[in-house]
Image (cartoon, rainbow over the protein chains, first blue to last red):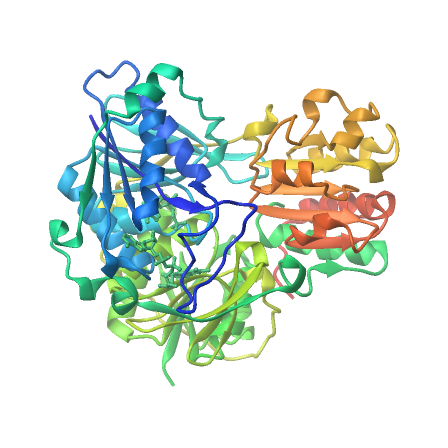
Length: 263
Length: 321
Ligand SMILES: Cc1cc2nc3c(=O)[nH]c(=O)nc-3n(C[C@H](O)[C@H](O)[C@@H](O)COP(=O)(O)OP(=O)(O)OC[C@H]3O[C@@H](n4cnc5c(N)ncnc54)[C@H](O)[C@@H]3O)c2cc1C
Ligand SMILES: Nc1ncnc2c1ncn2[C@@H]1O[C@H](COP(=O)(O)O)[C@@H](O)[C@H]1O
């Protein structure tokens, strides 16, 4: 079984985002780490590999040179090999361009199962897994809170709040994205950490994937950022505070919960 | 003016408020048309019309219910290729994001997510990093696909008389690839994997006050939890403590009651998808993380909220009025 895990290095949560003059995220300064949900995806791949001696886990990232740390983390956790897609032309890629590159890398590797995080902490789009699946022409099981890989099928449980749990099933090859609710990832032992040093990391430029520079990066993206304005106090939105008599506040809260499907 | 496709959600006889919000935004970009899975009923048609839908495209087929995500992808792609709309609006959410991502690839069109506002162009405002930044973006290739956080949109009616124009969409085999094999109600047991968590802090005031936390958690089918302060006071057992040394949580909804939001608490719950806080102090740090904050006394607001939830549960299917 060939498992590909898509991992991304993201700015550390408490450091927050900073934007460069071209409105892309500053990725080479300040602390960064493996995206938390991707950590869970790697952990799930290891659990799937237990009792499957033929399982081979490849971690793939697309990112600037520093993103290699995401791959190192994945290898320490237990992935077998890693691929780093790196090319100056990729700078500024939107979700559509990113999915083009990742799908090409996965296609070149060959796969039965692609595991992703359900959302990345920097863009937070939750779009890349579905886009990669669409490009690969396979089903996707997104937002898995639990993942069960059987011999012929893959099953996920999804809890959308309110105690409403849905179980979805599909046959591989397919893409699964997992949430952090899959459980606390296991911390690697010493042997695994030491062994990781010898594991190979391949670096692939765009040419290795048959993609033209003009198809990706700021030039090839279908969406552009025009302005990014920090909000004072980091508050989520201007009118987030409901005030006044308790009944009015309660109604406002109930409306909000209903809107987000929690009622 | 060009048409703007809105993916409408309809359950039973009710049209969701989210759909009314999408129609409200769509009117700024062109002539709204609602794409509906299932056959239209008079009440649903009336609501869609009241919020400005000029056309309703109902699609009736078994796939629409059995494979909701894949079927809606086909519906939108089919209509987009046929009608060349000025934009496609979809409510953000787990299904909506998957639909949007797939449609974007099929149409090779830009997708903007976390949209909270739209002006002509379209230029959108995105709320990113939980609102720490306001980002303005636009789509430069294809048909702009906007995944909208509809809870930020003020719904405004603008009555139109919709034309109902049923559409036949060819569904290829691949729409049947994902099957839902079970849907059940679960009682979560563990905080670390719970989808809904209601947590109480110093502001609940007493062990008796903590009952409100349990009641609200039960009303929302979630789990109760406590801050460091609540656990230290003995209002809840230590295994219910959410913070760095207790449990780190990632629920879909985290409702904080009377929790000011110390650093150690925030670290353990900032991964929640939606954060709602009720606190009497409008300056409480927890509000900086919150999607919505209610300022008020927990002892007064929470009973009202529980009553309101029970009222809505007793009479579901409120058509947005
Ligand atoms: C807050 C925010 C919201 C966004 N919202 C959307 C949206 O709604 N829809 C959408 O499609 N896009 C979105 N984007 C992307 C956006 O449209 C732009 O294309 C642009 O600003 C790129 O984003 P970035 O800052 O992540 O760029 P970058 O920092 O350049 O990153 C883009 C991607 O390219 C990789 N990368 C960068 N340099 C290299 C390199 N040398 N080699 C290999 N890989 C590399 C990065 O790891 C990342 O995966 C968003 C970006 C931000 C910051
Ligand atoms: N540049 C990237 N390299 C590798 N994986 C990525 C990249 N961007 C996104 N992903 C994967 O897609 C998931 C969702 O990302 P997003 O759509 O940006 O929220 C992440 O958790 C990763 O698994």
